[in-house]
Structure formats: C-alpha cells, structure tokens
Image (cartoon, rainbow, N blue to C red; front, side, top):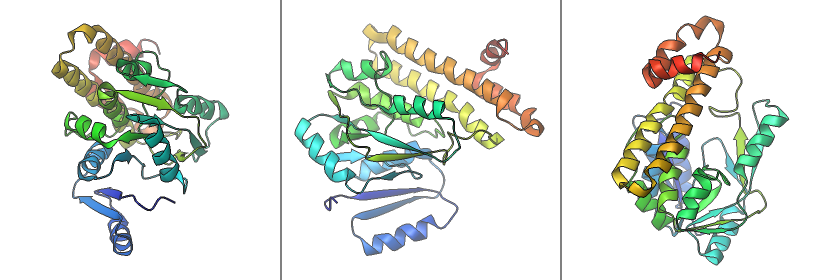
Length: 287
C-alpha cells in the first residue's frame, strides 16, 4: 500500500529461473531493482549489497522464503517516523511448513516477540545479547538506513551460510542508539520449514551449513578485537562463548539424531573441521 519504496532483489547465484523472473518484473515496475551474483555470497553478502545500493530513509529485510502483509511498509514507515528510533521491532507470524510440534512453534513465537518499551544507548545491545529480552532476528525489525549503512561497513565480506542474522544484528545493535518494541498486528510472515531451519531430517550439505556457524564465532571475535572496548571485553567473550557452546552442542545433536544412518559416518570429519577435536569430544562425552 506504500508506493514510495524501492524493492531491492539480490539473486545469490540461484540455479533456477529466478533471474529471468526478476528481470521481467523490473521491466514492469521501476521500483524493483534486481542485482545478480555469479557465485554465492550467502545472505550476508546479499544483504550487504542491498544496504549499499539502497537510497531510502529506512531499510527492511525480507528472506526469500517469507512474505510481508500488503500494508507492512506503510504501517511500519508511519510508526518508525513517529517514534524516531534506529530500530523498530514489530510483531510477526509463523506459518508452519515443516510439520513442527506446537511446543517448538510456541518457543519460536516467544523468540520473535518485541520488547514492549523504548531502549537507548548500550541498553539496545545489552537487552538482546545479555538480558535476552528480545531476539536478534533481522527481518522482524525496520531500521534507520544510516545505522545499517555504517554497520555494514564494519561487517566482513564473508560466506556465512547460517547464523548470519546474529552476526549482522550483533554489529547493528552495537552501533544502535535507540530501539522501540511495538506489539503490532503481524506484518511479517515467517514460513518456518521452507528454509534450513524447521526440518526434522537433514542432508550432509545442510549439516555442514550448521557446522559452519563456527565461522560466525571467529568473525564475532575479530569484530570485538577491532572495536577494542576493553571495559566490556568479558561481556563480549561470555556472549560469544555461549553461542559457541550452543552451536557445537546443536551440531553434535544433529549428528546423532537428524542425519540418515547411511551418511552419519561422514559427519565427524565435518564436525572436526569446523569446531575442532577438543570441542567435539567435550560435547560427545554427554552422549
């Protein structure tokens, strides 16, 4: 319903006919601006390019397998203009495409809830990563373009097939000056189970994507070293360690429970390559 928008579509080296579809729609609507990668840069690279070429006052992110309500841009633009914040966190809805249990869906619904108040300065980062009162998901928020553009310059040009949301929002939240959580109607529809997450059985390729979250851990460590915020070194180290432990545990659990018997023997090599022998052995002792 908001006409004055630009729709930046970054095709991350897709192997179907997505480029042709994008070009077709761009000819019909000048607001649609497609960009094409010849090789995959992961969602991180696609988002960085989208941020770089954007010219609007605010930025929203939409994953390829999800959709927005028809009035999302209009309602969210009006609200963030009124609240005058760097980050406006709004409500979203989960559409289950993976046959997940109601308990798992409820858990994810809670992770997506906005914190119904205003935050400023360091409170924005701490509320997400220290107190965990709202989640780091990128797509259920609308941002000041100025904030996103600066934060993107501090992000590495790296290939992160998973956990790139956390990496990006860690940096965005670090530089954010203000946040407002709005319990709105659900403007974003998360199609849970269409992507990597939300499925019960996984291939070795998907398993490797989970294991490559170790790259995000290393990148977060490099970012924290670069900013040299000595007063909060222990805080950042603790946050990163928590995610490292959580993700390495998750990968071992997937090895035991989500990979077909025929391919399970190939999983340890992938685990060791990404997490190191010590971390894997430490986790497997629990099993």
